[in-house]
Amino acid sequence: MKSIQRSLSLGLIAVLLIVSLLLLQTSLWLFETGLKRSLETDLREETEGLLIAVVQGPDGFKLDSSRLNPRYQRAFSGHYFRIDLPERSWRSRSLWDAEPAWPRTDGLADELLDGPQDQRLLSYHADYRRDGQTIGISVARDYTPILTSFAQVRLAGLGLVGVVLLVFLLLQRYAVKLAMRPLERARQQIAQLQQGQRQQLDIQVPQELQPLVEQINHLLAHTDDTLKRSRHALGNLGHALKTPLAVLGSLTQRDELAAQPELQANLRDQLDQIQQRVSRELGRARLAGEVLPGAYFDCAEELPGLFETLQMIHRRDLDLRWHTHADCRLPWDREDMLELLGNLLDNACKWARSQVLLNIEKLPDGYLIRVEDDGPGIPEDRREAVLERGARLDERAEGHGLGLGIVRDIIAAWNGHLTLEQSALGGLQVSIRLTTAKSRAVQQGNSGR
Image (tube, rainbow, N blue to C red; front, side, top):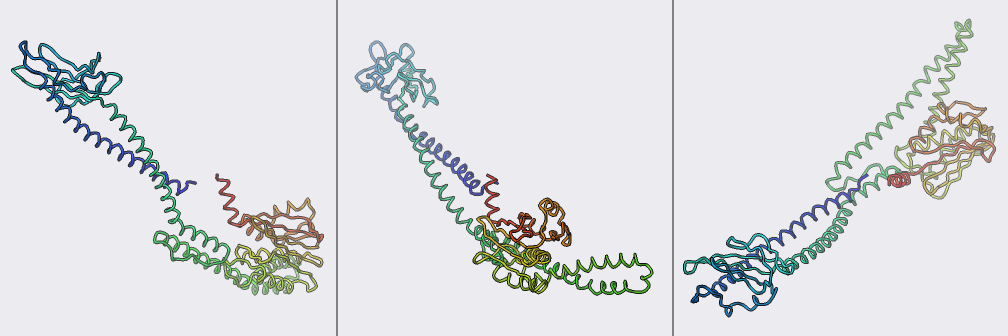
């Protein structure tokens, strides 16, 4: 999954890099354009100075060396000229034996010329008329130092751009971290919802998150109402069926059916199964009681009442015990946890000879729940078959009944794992390993890398 932070960082770097390079290159281009205009003025003044050095003699025009700048006399000085007349031409001694490709059009040349000793020359040409003759004067100046300076400035500019990008990236990461804090608070509140520590999300959030939070709260309220209606409907259905079943049971005792004993026996058997199922569902309702969906399971608060109810339903001489760690709070739905433990303990109580033990142990990544009894147990070679069936609470295997339908549904919803083992008490031990949502998120994140 792509990171928002990484996407924003890459987008910011790309935009800033393009803008910075454009600004750097545009600044250098503007500066160089202004510099060339200034140099063009200087080169034009040089052509005018050279024009003055061309004087009229007895044999026509000649070049007065005394009027030339001494830099034209030094070899490879970086200042060069060429004067062309119809009958002759002069060139500066500074050129030595080099001969650049002088421009023939007036003004500053568009391209740099190749000069002596790998110099790059900025050239200017001007045509003048004197005494009816055209005098073409071309001057050039070594542009290499300026090119070197521009390269150094460009390199320094790139370094500065890199520093600016790093500063902006750090500032952007800090800004994104600040902007993401409301999302982190919302994530923590959702975790608290899952642990039953709150019923809805705080609505005091930034404007951009408010529609999302309101929609989540609406969904929570809708789910809460749906669960309550479903549970109430189940209880009402169970109670509503008890009277018709009782009437049907009395009808099976009528004399009219006595003449058909096989039909009477089948009817009684089917009615007994229906009554057992209804009684079991009502018993589950008694075990769960009135609870709030989404509330966490507080062991110290819930287990005494659960065990007291089990003691009332089953034999008074049955030894029911539990052992938990200090401040035991299971971060799962309170009602589902009561239903899970109620079914397992109710089943253990049915088959225990004298003792049932519940043990809840905290693990680094979750919890381990063990329900043990000293009943007949299940042979090892039959345990997998029991787990594979597990569709009905009254299913029996090797003298031991284990209701796994609701238990397996709850454990599957929580991504838990159920195993059947031999108990130290002599009977069956049902072990359930549950991983917390935070640990699952960490595992999923590690597997996604």
